Length: 350
Image (cartoon, rainbow, N blue to C red; front, side):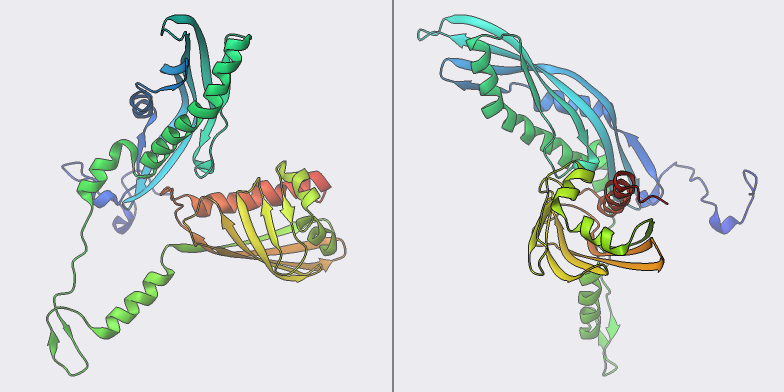
């Protein structure tokens, strides 16, 4: 390893005198925790919901802890966050004449908001400091009418983080507008001033059609027969067991499946018992119309040893919220939430 200040100059990024990260080419990380606290305070200012003589008001953001940051590399925003939020509530009950009859304090806790689950609504816990009839009515109002408002505002913050959080305005200012070709030579040897070369247009259409999607390739080994692994992946009861989530899986070609509490849905395209599973996969957090293809091939090079070759193609680089960690999260999900849990639960580890 070269010492500091030494090495091939072609691989050394020299500091600019003005300290500018030109076009955000280099990796830049911004801590967004304090910005998020301010953002949430503004989001929940003056939030109140009433139902007849009962009303609930969000008094303040009591606590926001965890971590939140935005990484920018080559102009691409990669948000990361794991935060917990607690909101202080105040409920009121008034008589038919508008006179205040009772006040009750309460709280809403959102224990885990994570970039890994950006496309899903987080868990919301409601507590009211009254166990009587008034407390029950207030809690019901919070669950039925206040909770949807809170979740919508959380989604606003998630989308803001995906766009850059506190560095959004700076990113917009530094965007480079690509220059169009001002001239080209057509097949007749003439100069085309507008750069509208027919062949170039066709090439651009093809490249843009493939842009924004990746393929995940994984090879995993298990101490089991290929038939056993095939049965586990196609059995909804065992899916529920090792993922600790709801699952509904058809075992027929053309049949549908729904796993991870509905976060992933799809269709069986090809099934060869003990050998091959090909499915169409779609995550609920992806843009409408986007689907990927999963192919799981199983081989038994040795007795009692199965090698799985996974190919997950057409995985979008970003979800509907602009999070650019879809490919990384999907690959980690295959490794940690599926393959590793199968090894642990069924003792198939190597």
